[in-house]
Image 1: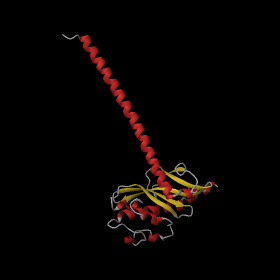
Image 2: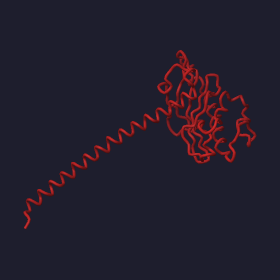
Image 3: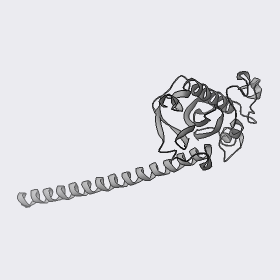
Image 4: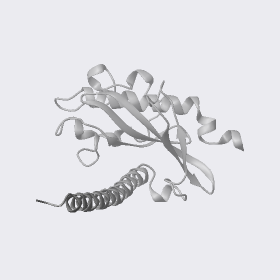
Length: 212
């Protein structure tokens, strides 16, 4: 007959071993997750910095765009549901352009996250999509890797073209739509125009003119 004391000791020993194993496993998972999160954050930082420097190239600013950030939260024009980072480009300390985050909520497959760079004179420096789920081969032409379409925004402003022309050609506007896809470019054109409207309404604070 097995000794009850021996059985209890065996159970206790096995329980301790299992407990230590569980603790070690949890620790390894935590370390792995932390390392993975840091790598993801760094990858996202590189992607963001690349997009910023595409919108405002290095030869047009002398500051660190990613470090010169400020929080912005606007639902009316930018369709933001919480605070997001915006960025300032500078030359000799003066703000020469800002890069605003904006959401086009009405893309074909849902929201499209954009960055819109606007020069101090109110003209567009550049537009880039940073996140979307648009149809490959159709709506994804908002990416510069797939099409040069977004480059057509460069130099445009609230008055050039006139407001009525801020639409795709199918709607009587100036901007091309994609073959077989109108919803995506329509949503982006509208969002970019709203970014310009926001800039116009908040120009002094965005360019820090009220601090001079």
